[in-house]
Length: 77
Image (cartoon, rainbow, N blue to C red):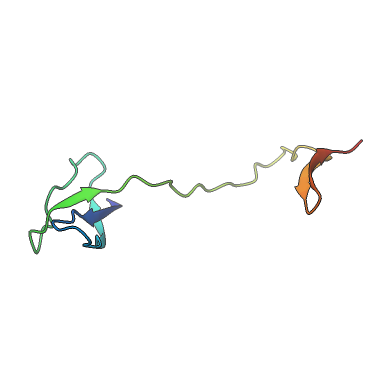
C-alpha cells in the first residue's frame, strides 16, 4: 500500500481545496470521490522522496570546484 495525496475539487469560486492522504494499492485507479464523505477528489502529483545509501567499496566523486555563493555562481581552478 502507498499513500497518495488527494485534494477536493472546489465547487464554488473562492473555495480552498482540502488535502487528504489516502492509502491505496499501487495499481489501484485514482479515486474520484472521498471514500467516507463522498466529496469530489483529484489525485495530486508530487515529487517523491529518494533514499540514497552508500555502497560498500565505492568512493564518492571528488568535490567540484564549481558552485554558487553570495557573489554568484562559477568555477574556480
